Length: 564
Image (cartoon, rainbow, N blue to C red; front, top):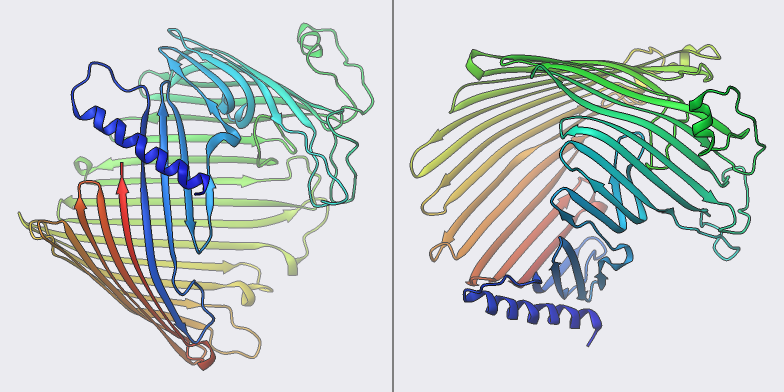
């Protein structure tokens, strides 16, 4: 018997023991809790017109066991055995714990901790740490390995080498969640002796680096209506610790202090990142102003990725009228790059949105969503060629209406959703190759009897897309339309549940009409409190209008599941 199956059976036996012990009142809670489930399935598959995409007789066994230990430690296991493949998962490749007692939290093992967005921001490390919040004092410290050493060799040339990286982060702050000020410092450095000299190429350059980041993050509540948010950091990043030393100019105390923690070199770059917001929230109205600036090449070893070289401004107002029945909210912002004026072109973006929600009564409601995204280019180091200039506008509008009829035993819902999207190219040279628009309509009806378990749903959908017209073609309109039907019914005091779903979709393009028919039948029976049996049958008929692409598929499945 395989070890994975033994583990699942052991977890199942252990859970039965735990359940047996909890049936009778006890004075002490169990120190270990086990939960999970076991599922077995068998089925059939047939296909005509295409190569088989599944086993003709699939079968298998799958299960999961979760062991919960004191202190919030959770150990999940899962395994799949069958003729479609086998797998086993367990958490011990990266195991870590963060037990909490009152105002103290301890981190050990593989952990990811966030102090602020621009310093330590969720990077996984192997080590330890502590976070202490006695009263309004906010303290935090972590230390560990941020990167594992990875060497390359001739047998595996695709492996990207990496130096072992070790670092620590400190946080000192004051306040409570939602109203605090924190100071953070992160320092990390690669060990240049952790791997042999990494090979250099045009596409790949790996050098040992060093980083010191100092940041401030704050959330302040002023007069119960005004909120102030600020995240700021300054990063000194050395791309190669083997580069030549440089002497730090000046003799002020700040320079002398950080000079003990970081060594400036020719490959060192000093950058900063800032994001700030101020907002007002009243009973019926509110507004928020946002600003962000991230210098080119800003990096921190406490985060995996940053979108740098951007500056943006945004405003987001909201308004509530008619005693809460009418709600309006929106936003508008602009963003651009090339902050150092060293790119061939500057790219600007404008983003606007508006949401209107009107609910005059419980039975009726309408939502309108509008968004507009524009992008354009301006000359940077070089003039922008008109035939290649990027200038586009993307408009999207959605209207969703709903009407509900509710009685004691029956609920009926009518829905109508309309969506319109249009991409406009403001460059006349490229417009014929990029412009397109899309219209989508969905009319739905849902019926449910709460006492008998009988339900029905139906939907009519229509989609039309106007694609760019290619050379020598006069019609690039694509249409999809058709109905979708479904029904559910419960029997035997709702122990047996059944459902049926079917859809018929027609697509038309370039004078060719295709059809896709799908149908499924499902049934599930609860034979005991924690045991179920289910059966399903699925059919697919695809006819694209081209004889060589017509096929049929039929799938069936019988399954059994138990949970504990």
